[in-house]
Amino acid sequence: MIPGELASGLFLGWAVGRNDTANIFGPAVATSSIRFRTSLILCAVFVSLGGLIGSGAGYHTLDVLAGQTIRTAVIVSMASAITITVMTAAKLPASISQIAIGSIAGIGFLNNTLDVSALEKIAICWLLTPVLGAVFAILASILVTSIFSILPVTIFGQDIIVKFGLVMAGCYAAYALGANSVAGITSVFVTSGLITPFIASVAGGLCIATGSLFCQKSAMYSMGSRLVRLDPSSALTVVLAEAVTVHAFALAGVPVSTSQALIGAMIGLGFMRGMQTIRFTRLILMLAGWVLTPAAAFIIALILDKII
Image (cartoon, rainbow, N blue to C red; front, side):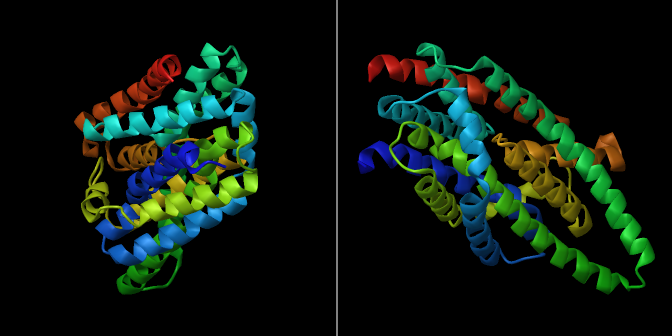
């Protein structure tokens, strides 16, 4: 194993942790349900567990998507790293799962190893991610409201329960992030024979965990009002919906975007509150990023294949 061949993959894992931690614990931090530093530690721990325990199904899906050699694995990883760097510099929302899939599809297209049916399955799951996020948020909102209408607790007691539930939901979402994302950033190295699935799961989880520790506090706080303003109860609803959505796709072996699941959940919450509460200008920017992200990764992978 040559460290240089894995460097871009390690960077990509770090970027997942740094960028997606706000999607996991941002609502909890923004609503003062948990301290910022505590959220980083919890996210790092549970994302590592998710990568180690729950990432197996994703390797099969991405192995079928396109075969890899060590050379193409490096190109895919480099293309993904370049794409996330460019998208971040341009301040456009980017899904690292989509970036990885776009890069793999680009190389597979060039080498005639792309399984179109597998790509179609992944694309359908991407479209379903925000939809399921919205549906689960509506169901979670109804469930939370029903529970508190039955429980004989004071407002103070409800606040304690909601904040505790929000922390637990964040831990679950962190686990789901690890289970869903690790295969996306390391599968090319497994398929090429460079490392084993176990080593990939451990290394990928640790890289995401390390990136989580570098998440900025400002990103956490902005998440609480990114699309819909959140209070602790609504934050619990969207994080729980996000976690269930991402984990469901992890079990299906399809890497999806935590931000898409979270935004879908916020839209579902906005539907419950009234659509006027949704910030549509930000929503349009996010939608543009979702379309541009895999396309940019696809093109960059094509270019790198001609250069390297």
